Amino acid sequence: MDDRGPDVDSAVTSTAERIAAMEVRGAAAIADAAAEALATQARESDADRPEAFTRELREAARTLYETRPTAVSLPNALRYVLRGMDGDTVAELRAATIARAEAFQHDLAHAQTELGAIGANRLRDGDVVMTHCHSTDALACVEAALEDGKELEAIVKETRPRKQGHITAQQLREWDVPVTLIVDNAARRYLDRADHVLVGADSIAADGSVINKIGTSGLAVSARERGVPVMVAAQTIKLHPDTMTGHTVEIEMRDEREVLEDDHRAEITGDGDGDSDGLTVENPAFDVTPPRYVDAIVTEHGQFPPESIVTLMRELFGETTGEPWEP
Ligand code: RI2
Image (cartoon, rainbow, N blue to C red; front, side, top):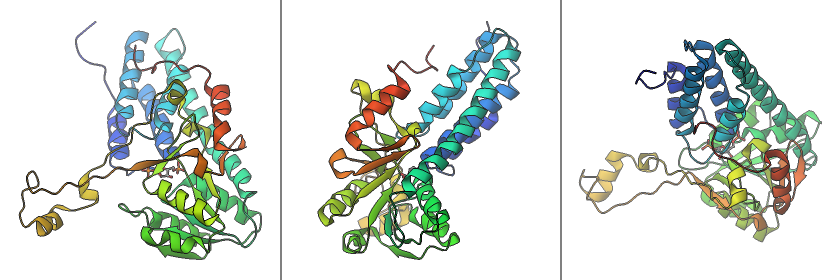
């Protein structure tokens, strides 16, 4: 065996960079891109022995895994594909990995459609939904309700700092849904006009806590106070198996320049020295909404009260084990 590390295909590193930079974002899109990248690694590998092929795939998975820590769909996707890497020859391993990645991507798209059909049942003709950030799982529920002939309106929270609410507004307008765009601080005032809060999730913990874009927990608390039900749309790929054994979900801290650009910081502090100007900016990307503020978690397997989601987790994941990219 030579000393060189395993070759990681440039398509894998480029996918990892795009996920880290949030050019690919949203838990479902991240999982899809990760599976695609592993399939590309398998296809392009010039490993001549099964052990070398396996090492390359594990290294590719590790490269992808290290990009975003909170969205559990990423390790779940990597785990799923690597567990299907079966065979005695490189050709067999390659074929099995590619087939497994394709099956995963197919199931992912399918699950979102099924989830949408279930979530749509909660939405009545004429309802107003308030959204936070941009979630394709949440929008799948709206799309299915529209296809059922229901008319809906939306109050869309801008969602600082990256204003991903704009993507939601654009999608809803493409579907002809009337949209009222508000700044995050206006949410409580506008809850009086909302029939549902509808959000996605990046991870769901075993106790039913929902980890989603920063600001979700405050919105959920206000919604409870106003009597507006909170509905979380999350495919089972967002269930976090490690939380069944007591692990907590890491909250991603992003670059402070998403909140405050360098030139603006210099205006505030009166100098350009970001290291010692006495101003600290913190930029957590996600927060944790306790289960008592969530009315329903909608998955492709049905709707669950948050407290019972652990039953589904056990059924789907069994006992958790180590990461497949750790030999
Ligand atoms: P879908 C997003 O995180 C939002 O928090 C959104 O609710 C969640 O992913 C799920 O998105 P980010 O990747 O998988 O924008 O439903 O940080 O599309």
